[in-house]
Image 1 (cartoon, rainbow, N blue to C red):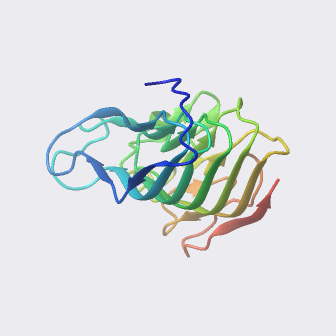
Image 2: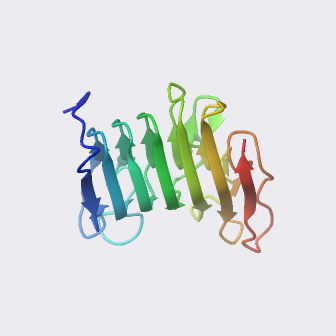
Image 3: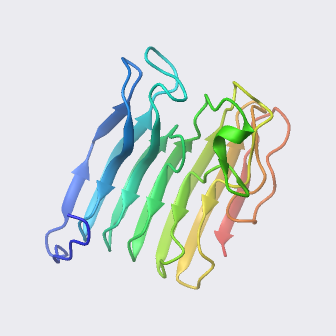
Length: 208
């Protein structure tokens, strides 16, 4: 349950080779597709996505706002693929979380800028660490946009995290696939905007 606090450090819980798909073969919806409440969990080679092509697909037809939400402490993700959700793809609330290799595409089928507007922020980050978190680290993480329904869409950033000494990222990138939409930054307000149609990544080697 949420707020679980049992110590599994000597024998971690594992989630391995799990495939979650919302819609696509037929209509389906989810609020949050995967929630990790347990401390000391390893998420390995897991692909969580909302379909944005195929049958039974539409911005509202198979709406799924959130992909993975991590509430537990000391959770390690290795090979995490989370894609195409209507809002945040990954939200991390637990302490001492670590992600090694993260792959993401924002939802192709967003109809317009207003559909993804997050208050005053343009778009929802692919990977968001909550402001309450003091320690978190990530390595080798990328977010791609392919807003082919409305290529004028702009996304403020691929990654959002609190600016704290214990929150660190290494080797981040954002990519616009063929110029269909663009990122303004990589993480928070750091990193150059993606430009043009040549699918050239914008990178941040180390943050902060």
